[in-house]
Image 1 (cartoon, rainbow, N blue to C red):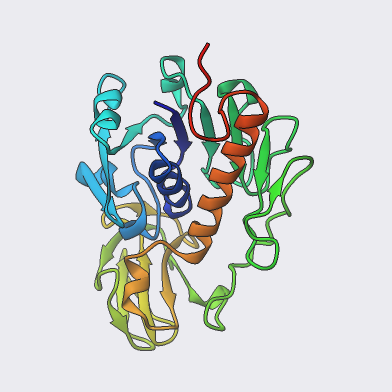
Image 2 (spheres, rainbow, N blue to C red):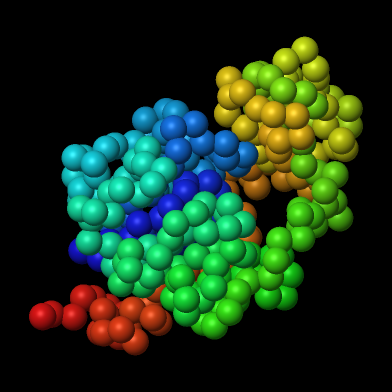
Length: 274
């Protein structure tokens, strides 16, 4: 079986994992002990909290260094609490994808897998990874970069339904997050959606609450904790976004293209026999 390790299990990492899984790769994902993903309904990171979680019909199961192979052989995505990706010491990864979205390289190198791919800025293709995938919304989204870097992070959230930075919910103070509304709820402008400490977080405009950080997490003032989608389509909260889908397909294309060039695949249909 072809094996892929995806670092991170947020919504964009999940898009990559889904594409690789559907193409026949056995997928292992690594996460921190308390993931701060926002779009939890479409993030395999939720398996860290619940033990298992399904996205678009694909199931992810939290496991450990001894159990990942059984999970993968059972047809599920394995999720490990392993921030340093130490599982690579015992896992022969054909493809490694850094989808942590830290905007910098936190330790990924080209020797970690046969094909090493990163999402977004902070990496140089041909130096510390084989391929960089452009993550900025717009014409270049999903572009496969073979030499050089992705565009620098602008710090401005991409526009959805005519709303950009204003669609992001941020913690008004340091404290514990308590949900008032659940992901997928339709909310009106000014309606409470969460509390942080003694302060209330309200919707900046009417729409669908597309994402909300895990309840009970301790957050810092200014930290992103939610996302309101002005389009008001509830199904968008439970399905992979256009961005995650585009990045996932780009990851799969890059994996098969570079893998074939390195002699790993025969026309993308299997591992070359020794």
